[in-house]
Length: 281
Image 1 (cartoon, helix red, strand yellow):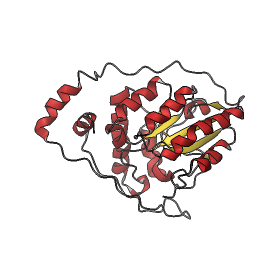
Image 2 (tube, one colour):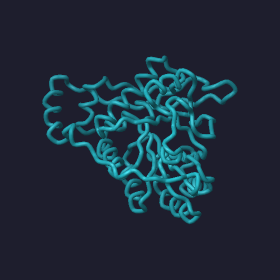
Image 3 (cartoon, one colour):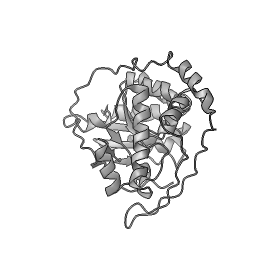
Image 4 (cartoon, rainbow, N blue to C red):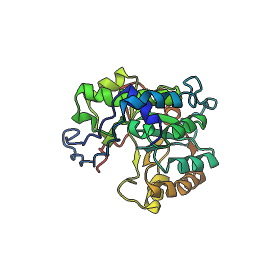
């Protein structure tokens, strides 16, 4: 774990991953419990100041990554698709960014705050910004938000907003509720935080079927205007990425971010995406 976790420990205490326990909406299938993440080891408070002083010269808050110019794409006239990746950044995210960069493709990454604070998280996020990708909020610990109090929902989203802003200098305007679990309280907090709720149109189920051929087939058959759900933490999804890009490009698709797909007209708190069934894990 890099020294960035020290910054996050100062901003807010690091918490464990919540386990989803509730039915997300009437008539739906209960979300399966997720294995809790191992919390980071405690840090000696007396060493924090020295470590922070060592970090600051390397990453001055005034030196944020600079994104490329804004693109003007009319997805009402051309065939667009928005590829989205959840649960990172992880150990395979850099490889995915290499693949996307090699083809000049922009995607949207819904990141987990804890993952941003660990490993190569800060480097990957800064690279996402400089290469034109969009970053969305996927909570701090991948907790099922509908099982939390309003204060808990607010904490999960606010802590991730804070760490991403600290790393990139940018405030996120999108969020994706883990497991697709949302409701009135989640919408209210998202609205208050200026976050539109992005679900999906095509679920590749790459978290369940760790097979690059299956992932490629599901993603590459997406209809125009789709938001495609994948996860950059699975090696098989990374393996599928070049084939997904090639097949969609052969069908004449333009790859866009979620905000570009919707023409920048996304209202905070509102839900976007046709497939509203919860992700079952």
